[in-house]
Amino acid sequence: MSNDSDNQRLSPLQREEYVEQHHLFAVLGERMKENMPAQEVLAAVREEVLATTKLPMAIDFLLSELKHTGAFADGMRRLGHYFTPFQCYVMSEAENDKRQFDLRVALEVLAKEAEYRASEATRQGLFIYQLEVLCRNRLGYDQGLDAIAADPSYTSEWAEWIFTVRRQIGLVDLADLLYVRSEFALERNQHLQQSGSPVPILFGIQEGRIAWANRRKDPLLLFAAMHRHLGYPAVPRPANADPEERLLPTLARRVEQMNARIQLLEEEQRGGIDLERFYVKPPAEDAAGDST
Image 1 (cartoon, helix red, strand yellow):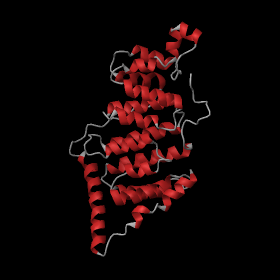
Image 2 (image 1 turned 120 degrees about the horizontal axis):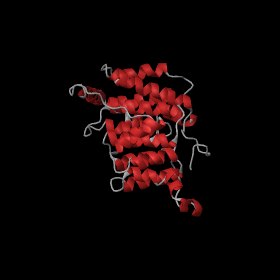
Image 3 (image 1 turned 180 degrees about the vertical axis):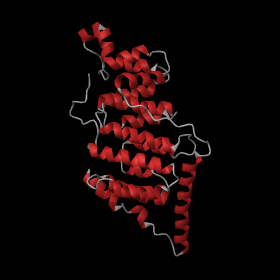
Image 4 (image 1 turned 90 degrees about the vertical axis):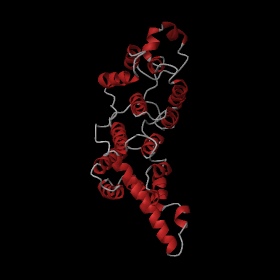
């Protein structure tokens, strides 16, 4: 079985980075419920996180992007050495006005993932969590699984299998996709043990048993069984809140975007917009890139 003792480290960053990332996303989510502007929250968290991590430099860059665009996702993508493709995808879906994906739920999702990475995380648990995020929140499987496969936490064997899941999900039962790549399936088929498994084994006996027991069932039951028996992290669920309250984060983002546009109009009236700041790479990004 492919395990986490290989040469590739499970998480691309040090543990303290994920501890501080968890703090960032958790505080953002909590204070947005209080209708605090995201820029003020970021500036406050910038002073709270450890200066020995790379997160303060990342926050400086995100603040700059937020002032210009009023969004997080584009800035996170430009810091691809620090934020994973899955983190960027979750944030971009939350900021997509066509999606019914609450930004506060997205921040809880990212906080929970960072917390799991800071603990004794496994690739099996990380994948199950990320896949459940897509399922529960009805996010796009194509782009979502592409983002998961691009996560540097996964080996090439994992990435290849995730692309297989992307092609077959909806056509093949999810539990079957997990089961056939488990040690439990290998144990049940003795002839595979004698001839050698034709495909890499990615899941253990327990994951295989749970997948076998949940064949032809709702995938959410499979995830729930993984939580109960293996302690894999559960995906945060949206609370039953007032529908009008869900509009507040969207309205706050739009206000910030309008403020950014008004600033550009004011600069144009004063004699023109300084375009150099949009083309010259910000020092914060250079510093973060050199340090990682």
